[in-house]
Image 1 (tube, rainbow, N blue to C red):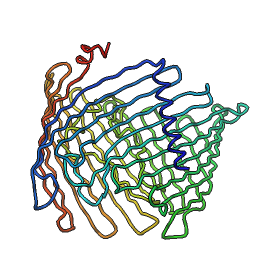
Image 2 (image 1 turned 180 degrees about the horizontal axis):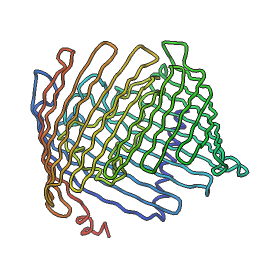
Image 3 (image 1 turned 180 degrees about the vertical axis):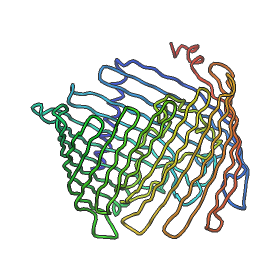
Image 4 (image 1 turned 90 degrees about the vertical axis):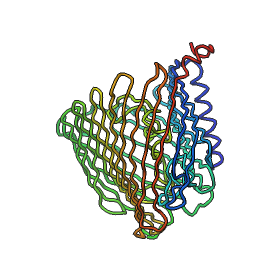
Length: 485
């Protein structure tokens, strides 16, 4: 089943690329980043500190194509790093959508590459550090789905999603996910009452250890009622049947949730809910607020997960902020080695209950921009009594000082805890200046100080980094070579 799924995944992605290549309208940008970075603590150790220079060469690209029934977009950075145990660190986000049968049969595909921590309890740093605690995750997925309307009374949707995660090295098992979903909902426009019947079957396979395989099944009925144009209430009831190795025999049962959605205007929405699953009672909260130059978002939920999956594609080379404003996916020091890498959560195996809280605030002015992100995650694994708490607070301030000169500041703090009373705090502060040297070229200098305080012996470190980055567009060069129009 897994081998067939992998072949199907590869053939489908290749077919989408061939379709996109014919008859689509394309836009693309290419650039080259060359960076020289220095760290005074390459292994992030407390006593045996060693300095090291690293050269980073990174071709970057963005591409967008749209045809009659297909859309494709991608952004990527191919980072080659000298003086590193692993020299290639790609970062990628790609998405494609195709309409195979008009208004009925569609297929979506996603691909990504990113760096993650192998052990969340150990220092990771960034790709220029030699800690052995960073690896690259490649994710591929396809999602064919069928939609139709039944006698103008209900809408039917059938989904199948196949995903596969590959990891460089042998520290983390590769994994495959098969997900079948169906939804039968009332057609829009039949009054204030709405209803739906939803079903899901999901299976996660681990290549080298099937003891942590996870099966999730659920069936739910939902009912909603709009009290007026701004306020609506909803309720759902059903059951779930889950199979995985656990420390308790209870891993499924009845499911219910009640809630309300209030949206008095297009700038504000509030979704409050309260429900029950086999792991206990839990609230859900989703708040979104926009006012002039400010945007605020807050979300809390509790869910059963089966290993790491990078579902938030927007976090990899994001080309928009939370307010939907365009931004440079390669800007801000994410790839220049001058700051702590924004590494995703560890790829730990097995079923776990995750309690997640995240808040984002963005304030934009004519020449300045302030963003603040706070997050909290508390995971409990069912197969063993492990717990993992992760807290993070990060703030960034950008200011355009002159026409070709800008400044950005970053300040971050994170805490990691587990069930053994282990605790580690990590701080990092960054200051960077950017100078435009022409229409297509930018020069950047950054300085970062990072420190870690841990209650485990020989687990602290201090680090200083500097990086000089030259980023230039290849548009003019490719045009002279006759490759670009």
